[in-house]
Image (cartoon, rainbow, N blue to C red):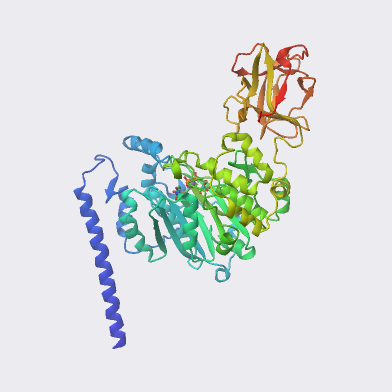
Length: 586
Ligand code: UD2
Ligand code: MN
């Protein structure tokens, strides 16, 4: 009798569940038929308000009862499978192009790809060979924060995590909605995630938090021992989670980043590099940079599967022991919308006894976008959230080295960026090391404009009562470019600052001045190229700046107001060659 009763109850539950789902699907389809076809003649269709290609839509309907993890050993056909690029037909191109403008990614292309698409396994063989004892590893909560993300990139992030995380390790996925306004992310999303049977939790914020507070809010919901953050346009690949949690089991104070592979914004092509060669750095304007792995780190690592110590992290994709993450200060709650938190957690982790590490066996793709498809204005109409967030981190963590940030951003010196007391108290409480320790030990060799230099400041000549300054002329400093002259801009104009290092390099943060002259030539321009030991050296005698390789001197002779600076035969009587360094703060 008991057995019968239980069976009956089960049947009842199945029937109710089935009925509810089928009814919902029918309702959605009804709704769809009532809607005017926005793109008639186009091959995509609407499912409710969600724009999907027909085969993805079929999948959507078919699998709406409960999610089934695909068998990736079976070959899959379809657009974008195996991480291949998707190219749009002539009739679809216009929509794809407008997506690139509005979303900074080709949502049209993304909509054609299965949410469960297969991806290449780009790990090295040594990584694939590692066996993990899943029973002994800590569980993880994956927190995905989003604000008005397009449907398919967002759901593909969720599917990829569910499909490629060992069930033993994946405690839950926390979807943290940072006050999205788009219709499709409202009712539909609650319905959609039911197929994951409680594994995916949706948390809504009805006030925009910005990504920093959103991450904090998401982490607070996490119940796993490890918290993993992902952006809402990622794809996790085979074996991505195991090496992260395994390293945390080994070193609780390590904050880890997977290898961030690239998903092309235009075609959704997946590109991953098995050979980890980069670490994170930063510029004094407080932006994240990629740097090549230093020799000493290459020597320290015993195997290609070994973690890589990195001075900083990009920010979006990371794993940490949840308790440790909060104990070491979580994030600065007063940072708004976007930016700065990644360098803040990097400086803080290293100086307060933890570390930042890249895990070469863990690969996650991310769609790198050329812009932000959401409002970047912070509280109090703040249009410079990166600037003000960065000022907070400079004031709390960089000691006197914050001056290097203000060399770039003198406009922020007197800017009120809110109360810093609690963050400064945190630094005291955790007895964190000075920023100089970080510079000396974690990122040695980082160039400091005004340390170990013969001179620094704005570099100018004074001709006929007119000041001409050395200037980058708005060239992208990440690339090589010619060096120019421009009328002096005065106080704190960072494109006009130069240093003459003790080694004799005439340089800026990463680039050094190279004279572009062949043997026996008497005139040439000056290129700014990435500094290295063999970069050109310059002497500063009297007021002449002499290039030691060519013997020629820096000169403004014959130049227009905005022009490339030259090197030519030295002449100590020429006003065009009398160079002075001026304190950029005066
Ligand atoms: C990078 C990081 C990002 C963050 C940022 C600096 C990677 C791959 N991404 O920028 O995680 O560290 O640098 O702050 O390293 N979002 C919200 N609320 C907002 C704004 C954004 O929830 O107010 C979400 C957004 O939907 C996305 C995530 O935050 O999922 C990151 O935003 P992004 O993708 O625009 O940032 P990204 O990749 O340029
Ligand atoms: Mn992103």
